Length: 211
Image: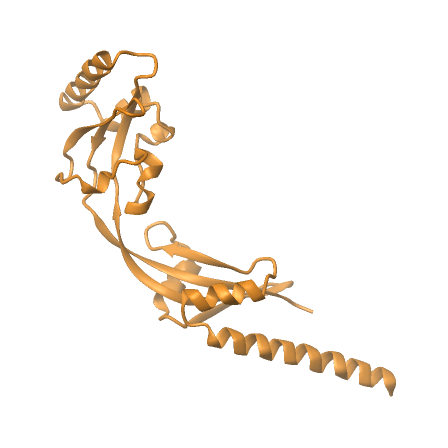
């Protein structure tokens, strides 16, 4: 009898905990309440995730973009149950460029400018920009042909330090130069895409271990 009561108590406790967790989850309807939930539930795997419509093409991401704020979807395996709840949906302006970065650290600026002019002439004469970037750029993305991928205004500093490249006004496929004299960095930039509104969804991920 005592053993039965112990098992019953454990089951009841588990069910109550699950019900409380569900109630807490139902109260979450924005980023602030999601962050508060995470402070009080520091289980490994619990976190806020941002999905980008251009960068994330998985089945899960596709399903999440179909949900409205407050909507949930769940995945399970033999060990855990994972719930994803949409807490925010936005559309953010993104930018995308390709660039060649030249470093004047060991070279006179006048020589850098002359070299930059020759590269632009080579491009105008038909050489692909990605080929020139792979050959001459010292940037980390040179192997990708200088492509930045889609980035937001707040992410521009990853490529251009403190220069706000998003303020430039060029048409698609225009080529132009940019100087960062303070840091001795000189750019050749190809405006490969016009600014684009890209949907993003912020999701609260909750992981629960199975018994």
